Amino acid sequence: METVTIAKETKQPTRKKIRRLQIGLNVLVQVVLVLFLAAMVNSIAFKHYRRWDSSRDKKYALSDKTKRFLNTIKGKVRITVFFSPNTPITVDVQNLLTEFQYAAKGKIDIENIDPERNLSRAKEVVDKYKVVSDESLLVIDYAGRNKTVKASEMADVDQSGMAFGEGPRVTAFKGEQAITSAMMDLVEGKKNTLGYVLGHKEPPLAGNTPISVLKTFIENENIKFQELNLFDVGAIPSELKAIVIDGPQYDFSDREMKLLRDFWEKQGRILLLLDPAAKTPKLNAFLNELGVKANDDRLMVFLRTGIQEVALTRDVQAHFLGGSPITKRLAEVRALFFGGTSSLTLEPERVRAANIRLEPLIQAEKGYFAEKDYNSNDQAKLQADAKRNPGTLLTIGVSIEKGGSADERVQVNSARMVVVSNATFLQDNALTQDQQALDFISGSVNWLLSREQLIGIAPKVPKTLTFSLNEDALRNLRWIILVLLPLVPAVIGGAVWWRRRA
Image (cartoon, rainbow, N blue to C red):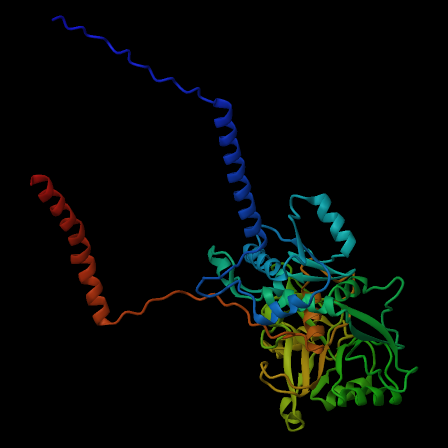
């Protein structure tokens, strides 16, 4: 019987057609969705994020007082930054302003201008805001009002190491205090008013005034001048918390002196610049009642101009003392006081019972002497007088405070006065580019207006990180370094070797 084998035809599977277009579209859609999700996440993270300062000293963390104030701002604040890269606090200020922007939630715009590179833009902004300082600074603009904050107001800098080749060292960073104070002045819209006494041939405020630089400088501190003629008022207006008496050439009348005394007794504030050449016995008697005697003399010094030659000069080289909040940041800074300058004698013990405190602010350099016969041209006599007072410290600036508290941290109402026995050092032709005189007057005016601690934000003092180890801790550390650390890699290496050998 014959067997017939029938080969069964195997059916080959059909290959599916690859739809490349569909796959491409799917990949494209996935890429677009991923990019869209990434953009949305970044957008949300950019608008809604949180910042934490995890640093040890919280250098840029804003105080609750500043944050509450920033929440009350209704309009837009514009801050223009004029900072040279060489300024020691440039990076600190930039980081601090970033925190201000974050806390203000879009209410602060910041423009950084390098005055050494972008000269055209710098000149444009300087002309707009009438900036007279060549120091690194901020200009804060709000609702058409503006105020400058200088770098020296934002930090205490120790420059004692520069003589040894070291750079300046920031001992205290006060940027938050200075910036928040300036913004509060602008947002509140209240300018402090400074009365400027006229009627005794003082330099005028308007027109061709010799104190135009000073006037602009003070007005940039959110302070406005108001002319005050004591002949025209029955009392010094109550809105004037402080007045300026700038080099009167004639004495005050009895009526004017009564107004001045009444103002002082009502906790008034006075900035008095004396012209030694003017005869003002009633004004001097008022000072004498407060323990300060304006002497009828002139400060002079003989300077050697050759081997056997000396020259007499009446321009006074003086330095600021750092014991007062007025001159704290000007401590030991030198300045020239041109023209005639007389000495001031302080008698603090005589007025202590009346709760009057005297603080010297400016002293002439060593070598100066107070000459009573100042109109004499007898060089031999003047040299003999100079030798009679070697090394005498002569005061030409003083602060007076009646009432209040000697502790700067305690704010108590008081009468305050700053007296300088030179009235020409603030005139335009006497001011130098160093601007020590302007900074001194700025400190004086702010002290008179009780603005030395406007908001009480403490400065950030750099702290050195130190470790204190006792004998037991040192012994443990020695064992860790000498035994434990070398033992760890030895154990790991032994384990690896044993595993490979097995």
